[in-house]
Image (cartoon, rainbow, N blue to C red; front, side, top):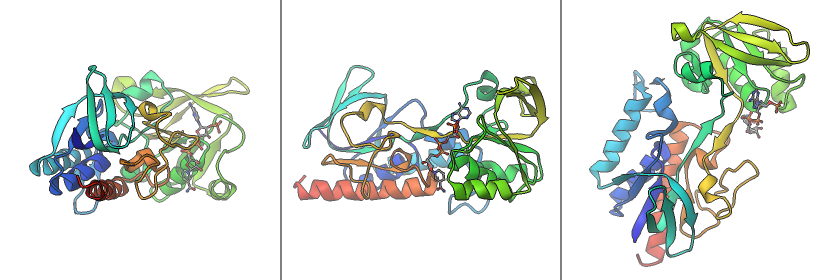
Length: 307
Ligand code: NAP
């Protein structure tokens, strides 16, 4: 039986691995379909402390991985399909049919930004289509951009982006925002944000050029089609925490985020770190911080059990 199994290789999982390895717990990290997590889909990361000139997302994850490995972290590729959490011996069933057992589990499977699902949108992710204004906003200084969504995230992203450009089109599929009034009011009062109500994106232009040049839009009430020219498309239509395998085994909120108190879940010996338990901050540095906390909590738990 493993002492610590960590699920996920984003900043939360790899920081948990670094701390668990340095505590001589010889953690086993299960690496899923997106090794390195969401940061591998971004380019320059300028807000992770310690890198004066920024660092490329994939490179940051690569060095974090190697740093954890240096102290004895082991990696195994696989997807956890289901779990059977029983304090003392938590079972994890992988997609290759094998079952792993661990005294403690740190869930750091992250969250995935929701996208509209258009083929053009998918092809241009990282080439003008992004879901992170904090990460990518500064690349669009003085350029026309669009934000899609009507919730608090869309308001926050649009308002944040006004630091860089005064040409922002906010596209929402209904005629009222879902966002809190205070956030919505700030957006409504901004002269840098032009709102298109009742509007959906039909196509992101221009896949042929391999960059974003504009959008084809449709008004859902009138059926009228139009085009706008933009350089960047910021998707803010929500996130989905990657918690499917844990449903019914652990407490989650109504959106599927794991409920954790200082990374401790309701199941003894199971901890959660990073975006899988955080719908609010969702930053690499906060994920890394909670990964550290989860490893320290796991270490304390094992110690209390004399393991
Ligand atoms: P959200 O509240 O679920 O809002 C998602 C928005 O995207 C909705 O307006 C929705 O439209 C729209 N949408 C969903 N799928 C779409 C699609 N396929 N095409 C076009 N539009 C689509 O998600 P969120 O804004 O990420 O917020 C998540 C949670 O975090 C909320 O509880 C929020 O209050 C919280 N949050 C708080 C803050 C803050 O307080 N500072 C900041 C960010 C997030 P409809 O309205 O038509 O459904």
